[in-house]
Amino acid sequence: MTGQLAFVESPVQLLNVLEWAHARTPSGPPGTAGGGTPAPAPGTASDTTPAPLTVVVLSPTDPMSRGQLRRMAQLARDEGLTVHWQEARGGRGALVRTLRRLAGPLRSAERVIIGDPFSRYVQLLLTLFGPRHLTVVDDGTATMEFAAQLGRGERLVRWHRKGGLGPRELVLAPVTTLARRRLAPARGRTVEIFTSLPVEAPEGVEVTANAYAWTRARFGPPLLTGGADLVGTSLVETGVVDAGHYTRVVGELARTHGATRYFAHRRESAEKLHRIAVDTGLQVVRPELPLELVARRGPIGRTIVSFPSTVVHTLPLALAGTGVKVAVCEVAPEWLRATASPRAQGFLSGVTGTAAHEVDRLTARRTPSVDRLGFG
Image 1 (cartoon, one colour):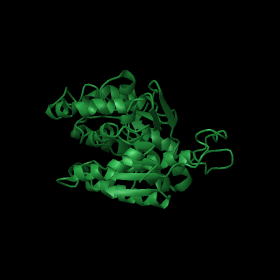
Image 2: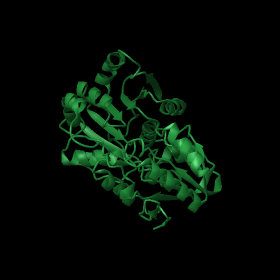
Image 3: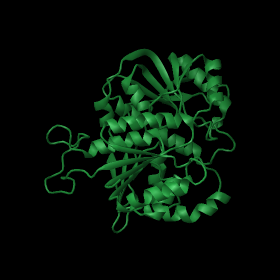
Image 4: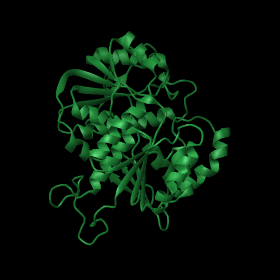
């Protein structure tokens, strides 16, 4: 494992590593790079064969993520990447075994690509071995918060976390502090954010647009069905949104837009999904791949309705030119749980407000019974 080293912990991270590799490979038409951007001028650093890219999967424990990652890993191998599956959380001694295996490759890697700068595992790796070149790819809307916190010089905290430092955070504070320095540009270290999201580049950080060119080249266009499909979210599981409000809104959205399928987020609980299926009559689908690939392969509804999440930014790119309409339903303040982070409402509103211009906004009547939902 030499050259370029990517650490992924979710299927979406691996998808975006594939997109990053495609964008940097001059495999498109003459005069373009793989992502459709102008080819580098001769003699520049990019005018060379890219260093070998090895992907290390720091395997999560939940079955849905593992299953999607297995399938994404095979897609990556089909594209010629080397993929190593590491049971990083596989019981006692897993951390030590992982660090021992990765120490050499980390020292020799000229570039490290990560998908989750908030990950304690990744932060620990960065504190032990600081890369000369670092790339952060999307793993959801957290990229927006990472860029903002890095630009303001703040400690890295996930947006849905509430309160100050707990006992675990206090123990890990030195690791987080050093990792934050390693995630920032400095003399002898470059930092790139490869993203499909609207982020303001922190000083010294290069932001590269992810247009989902690999996804569009590899799959589709999809067969379109009538009606709509709904996209689920883990806002209930992360303690942000009240479960009762969420289920009622899902039912109302299904009736209003003629939806028949509900694409579940990989972190949604079985109990919640059972309740949605029983209460709304929707067919609950557990996607085998990230939704961008599922939608691109089809069949997919002519309208896709989502709550504030990354897909309101990524699906318009992945489905460009297909005629599919994407809509986002705002989260009303009274849907939030009392234990939700004070930052939750502002962050979710920001995700909705910065969605692409072609994304329709759905507004909800702000009553507990959620009387009506319609296009805003």
